[in-house]
Image (tube, rainbow, N blue to C red; front, side, top):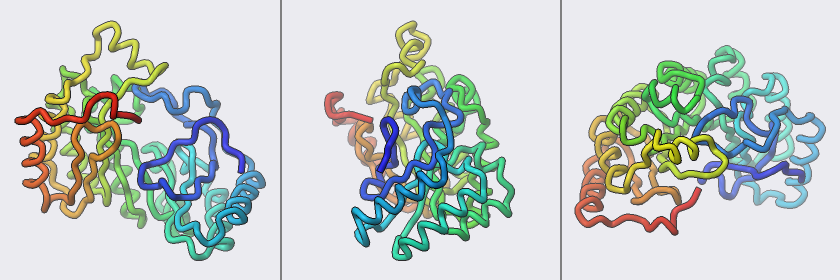
Length: 289
């Protein structure tokens, strides 16, 4: 199998067969992100993709339970090509339990409901959507290229068309200046989207992401662990997304949190408040992306 550059996948896809259907990210301007800076975006040739699927099948056989389509926004592929890939996977590996992919807000909004339902019917079940924040000012300053309203619309559209959705937010992305706004607006966005899964990362710097220059100049203030927890407390106190599986147990997080909204809200808040009271935070040398 041929992989180009570093291949990124969600934590929950750790044991999945990863197939690069696109290289890089079509947007690739987010100020905080360093994942695809060295890649020039393109959609791979269909014969290359199918060869990789067959090689993965030869090597792993029926131990393949899940397939993840990389890179940053696989859903931007032309609809018929995406359907062809999905049908090929289903034909060659009918036992696979789930096929998933990253999807940007732009990807979802640019496809019609008919196209999305066709892709879902062909076998793509779960979309990972990087919302990052629900605060329009944070989204603008981070060059996400979309508004919170558009992210919310995309999430609703995906669910309407039959997809499960997994949304990612980033603690600390509002800097100290917009800590409260970032938390409150993100809670409002998730309350609208009501995703099946919600994951929080905590902001970390990785060269040469442009945010590193902002921090060096003092234009962006990284939150302390205590401030990150204060932000999370605000978010959890205001979000309303009953049934959403909540995870903040990534390597970047200072405190591992897991539960289901809204039923575990009090348990999660108690855990946060205990951590703040006792300053029980993961050491920096244990954190990672």
